Image (cartoon, rainbow, N blue to C red):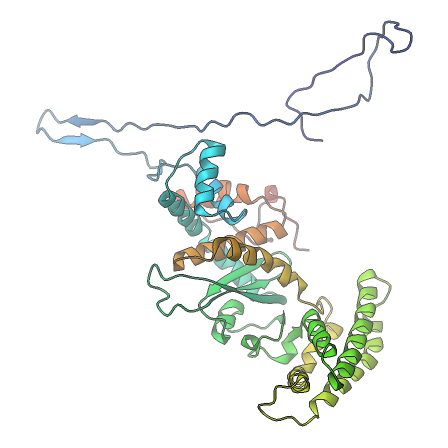
Length: 410
């Protein structure tokens, strides 16, 4: 139960059966709590800057705001609430404006909402950059991507290019990036030019610069490919069915590893026949002769199997490196809020708006994975630090303050 603001004790006066007067105390009374929120009234502090005339020269001089009073006219809690409504709950600017008025009694223009969002974006800039470096130096990183829309109000997308949200995921820190392309250059910026960890991803071509010895391809994506093949007519159905069956055997063994009923070293031995069978089926499909422009179901199957064969070693890294998952499910789960944000907001109109989105997604996803409070981070740490020119807060688990209820990286 929640901590009580007050306690009211209620004692029965008479016995419900014989009406005898009752005395004494119940050592373990039944507890019923009523949760209520008091009326929310904003605190408005008015600073009156007096202007006085000099008796000597006649010049008028007006007092200046104290250094700790921000010229925006809004305190750190207001900035943090606007940011959380936008970044955590994915409200549009009009919805934020309405929520601040209806719930908190704070009125502001749409321009002010936007300005406060950008102030918060600036406040977390260094923390997000540190998170990016942390992810790029992690041992295992999951990556995924989804489309995004960035307008050209500021002239930064004059070609009206398709934007992309990309993410790099570790157990406790996630970094998001929005770019106007999803090419190898964007992937290098996401993971780092000198990326030396293990990449868990799908077969997207932008990641092909990462060596096969450093890659684990997602078996969830492969399963979908195998099912597509099995649903095609003729030879494709036979090959696809065989591939699906071997994939199911593989995951039966993997689930036993996850349950603790099968050792990792035993998995390596038991998977070898499965690997041989899958490679044989892929090779059997790849050996079929097809025309370069052929678009039959079999041709689609052959091309898919040939592509998978080229990266076949990257299907099995999880067998030799403990801690590597055979699927990229963590990254797919992490990118769902980004997909919802895109669908509800229709993207951003400026590059600065895209930066706000990628930074807030980084902050919210990372804090949630560490079980830290997003509002506390924005109020107590980020916005306050930025306004006082203090060191920025950290999103990294090793240096996060214990009061933020961080799960230790170990």
